Image (tube, rainbow, N blue to C red; front, side):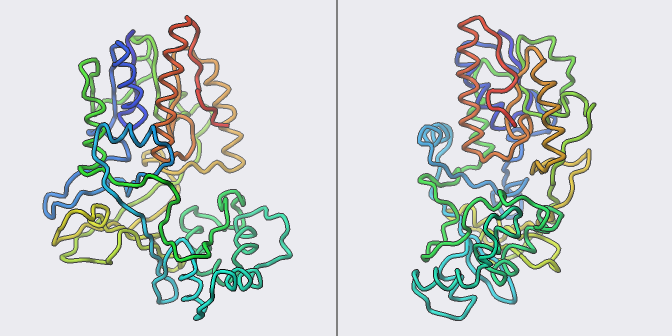
Length: 381
């Protein structure tokens, strides 16, 4: 069969590789001049630093099969994400942990003492938090909320935390120990030579042809037996029902001779600081040594038609529109919508790869059975 992958990021590469290994002829197209999508990495010519061009991507997973999969194509070296935040003229560790609490309040509490203390700070009158703000006030109280959550969230989402659902703050954002490892997952690391090198190896198969700087037009689908579409779901339909909402990022890139901030990620939670964070990219490769440094200031804003979409908003209005597009998509023949844009969901890299592997299995099972492949293997709703 002739198969088309629209998008040369993780979804297109992983599905494309599985299809090629199954004996299919695979074409991959991408509108950008490089593979890797938003995971694209490249070395800075002046400093030699491996730069995450579209912002940092840190690999973390509990999925052993996915961890083994990525390590087939690139060596992942140990990396722990330890985020700092500047607030009120001090630097604190995130997630909020026992050191953060003791530093913020000028105390030396033990874990059980800190639990009792924070419960005293919390707004216990909130029994069923409905908004982000209510969720935060219920669990950490007004002081920590103002210092670490309110301003950052407002800048990131462009609206008051009172207008965001409580589900965004999914779990208690506090650790009552001194663990400042941002993620809980068993497997954490960074690709030694960057994500683009990994994806290049995934795509390196005689059954795969890659075309870059080529914008997909829906009429091209007629030339293929099936299309795996990792572009924007609403874009497949030429936005005929309207555009799904996204937040996008602007990066202010700058160089520095030496070590600019001493860590990979420094958040800025105060509203009067216009950027959400500064990332210093050489710290994402701690096994390397560079005199120079490349840093990004990140600014979040509403996504316009010509911008790169990053975070699906998925508020009430967007979910209604999403439902209409999903209904349309389910009437389509010969296309499966995949990935972050195709399913209008925020996906970590490991989940993207897992879903791509499952999509390939489902397709091959339907091919063997002679039945039609669905528009979605994982529902966006």
